[in-house]
Amino acid sequence: MEISKPLLVFCSLVFFNPSFSWAAPDPTYQSLLQCLSEIIPSPNVSAVIVSNNNPSFASILESRIHNARFNRTSTLKPAIIITPSDESHVSAAVICSQKVGFQLKIRSGGHDYEALSYTSDKPFFLLDMYNLRDVSIDIPDESAWVQTGATLGELYYHIWEKSNVHGFPAGVCPTVGVGGHIGGAGYGTMIRKYGLTTDYVIDAKIVDVSGKILDRKAMGEDLFWAIRGAGGANFGVVTAYKIKLVKVPEKVTVFRVERFLDNNGTEVAFKWQTVGATTDPNLFTRMLLQPNTKDKQKTVKVTVMGLYLGDINGLLTLLNKDFPELRLNKENCTEMPWIDSVIWWANFDLGTPPNVLLDRNNKDTKFVKRKSDYVQTPIPRDGLESLWQKMVQNEKVGLTCNSYGGKMDEIDPKETAFPHRKGNLYKIQYSINWDDPSNEADIKYTTQAKAVHEFMTQFVSKNPRRAYLNYRDIDIGSAKTWSYEEGKVYGESYFAENFDRLVDVKTAVDPNNFFRNEQSIPPRSTKMA
Image 1 (cartoon, rainbow, N blue to C red):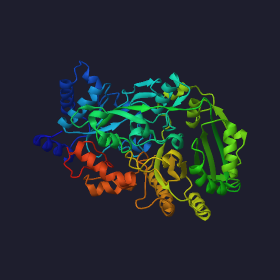
Image 2: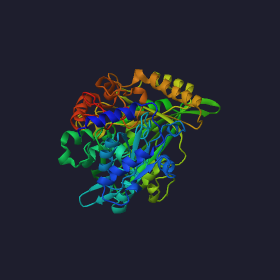
Image 3: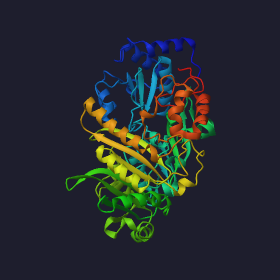
Image 4: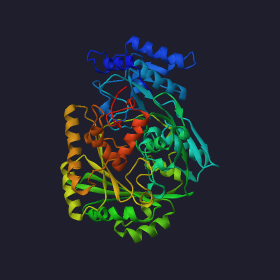
């Protein structure tokens, strides 16, 4: 959308005037309300916008903040939260935010580790997709339309309502929003059998910078390619995805085995690196490496957990052959319907009913930092031994390692915007959580995460060192002017050889860079709206 010169001048005054008040001024609220009222044919337009002096403002904002680091009194808040309940409201919000001269941030589930979807150092409006959460399942077609404000838990629940032999290959945390998860590629416990979440998107609806609502045919294949893995919020507001469901057995098997270093933990960790990526694609395994204390001695606990799309006997036969070091036995395993495995992976007790997946409440929010890596050659035994020492020194940082291979080796890195496919043995998520709200604790624990991540440089992907977009990490780099050079720093880590094509798509659909965050795709030349 072309922005008129007067509006550009107004925008620059709003964005860079240091005396601007962060409390939503009445003129701003009234300007937004008037603009929305001219577009939305409803007498209740005011119900869609919540100013920061509204009693409901804090509860709406905080209900989907999952990292306490970005819920401090010092955190800059949106001037207004826009809560659309219809696609037309989204279209109006995009048009009116530009007209009023405010940046627009877009939030679905709020699991953005760096809060780039709901914080900014410039005045902004927050478009909260919470109310756009419809899920429409079509079992005969083995497909579904799901709005981007829905959670993964809601999607899984509605699939289960219709079928016990269908599922969807997405993440294990039920409160994650569909919008961010699918847009950033998404993966889950069926990644080796079926590939990424975004590989099962067959259509989508997006509101572009001019406010038009486009489906796959209208947006074109370049934009449809980009929103599958590069984050839809770079290019517009994705309101819904049409997804293809996958078949699952009536019974699947889950298991969990724990080993310490004095009980063949190192051997298990070493062998897992290759077995996890080369065994039967019906088996996904996750290895957790966690600093621990045993018999008053600091050590590391190695946990292997998995999902097998089959029965216990089939799993035991497979792993006794491929991974005897694990010493898996029947007592470690449980057969269950696929929906119960979803609940198990979400850390609920066995027997918890599926309606727990509908709970969107944000409970027990921690201060967290996450980082990521991809491993393409096994870490040698002596490398693992040195890692154990580093983890003991930085005793709150854990590593979650997710097996690749299988279907991931069959899909070209350029098929979607997500490039990290063939050649990766596993992906690492570095995790650290804490409760202390002080700045000293923040520095201490983020420094620990950086220390372990830096130590791992010798063992992980290189040129570029790769990272996963959905594990946002601002340490990789951030944009100040949204130049190509700035974007390339983090863009090649997230998107590798796909970065330049994404820049071309961005330039075509949002040349004035209205849709942006601190790690967004830049256009070729920046003319910010």
